[in-house]
Length: 242
Image (cartoon, rainbow, N blue to C red):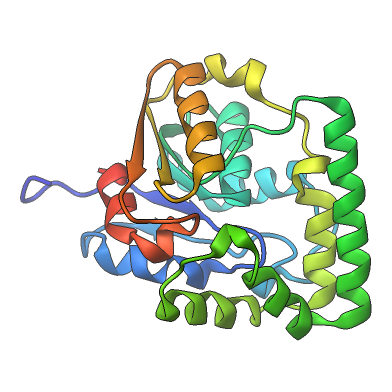
């Protein structure tokens, strides 16, 4: 960045089970003068008790808290919310950075099956409590291979939530509850970068499809990284934010 140039405001949207604190590693790498907004999304952290929890409400929250024009970056669930925010406010989002995310499940039966699975998981979370759920969530193959410090930081952040909030987020913000956006991606006018870790084969394939469908997006496979790029490779996200 050229000396004297003030970076554009950036909005960072976290993933499911996380809070704004999950962006700490990225924020430490950003220029000192950068204006950064990283809200706790409904069902999470300081917004755990906010109801209802749904895409329309979270998009409205994001738009209300964000500056008039901003770069928008979202990880996983936050990436899906970022896409919906950009579609709702294309004149305000000047750049889009999508991290380990998707535009939804197109097949109606597959989407319904995912919604039912999320409902069962939410029920289990409410019965067993946050700590047991946080242990199981972090043990998924999706997060296999994380460095010990990354896994510990992610687990500590999960414990900043509560069971009722995360259950509401599963029901209202899960991939099964989301209308697929693939057909709408060409509507987005802003430049975009789509990132995924090279060890995250499923989401790397989705990232390539996202970039191709957007039509004016770069895609990058981050060497040696898995799903949680903002924790494993924050420099790659900072570079994408430009």
